[in-house]
Image 1 (cartoon, rainbow, N blue to C red):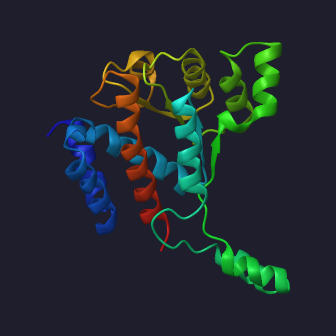
Image 2: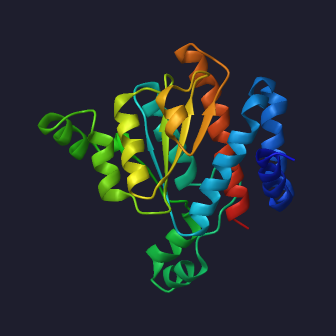
Length: 227
């Protein structure tokens, strides 16, 4: 058995039944993505390990991929498909905090820490103006990321300069890198710990495949990390 097959078997044997069902449904609905199965599973493993160790996800991309960063973070910071309990200790303290605390205990949802680097308009524009756009995501990672976190880099070409430099910084900082790219992969496909190369070459078609991939990853993480 090759290393990739062995890793796949290790992950799938340890998944909840519901998590595995989400994973398999991705390829039922999008059979073209079957070629990405091993890398999707590797990305899930890296993200899950990070969250279980107290880490977070940090996402960056440009244009439509910037919107995808916002989308990913939105799915992680609140419930996606299922109910999420907030931490029991926080809930107890809220319930003891009066009317407003009770309201929060009833309304809030469990959250997975995630940051969209494209949303930090102050630092993003300041650094781009004062120093350079190409290094702007790397600067944010330097300040926000810690070893064990995961940087998710979205680039249809795989060659977006600001994402490539973010990957260089992530490696130096002990941060795992997951790239969502097109068929060619570009530089990110070569340098990242995991590269999900979707089977398309045109920008909009690549982005159309990225969405179901990151939806599946978000749903799988939610299923594994919340009772």
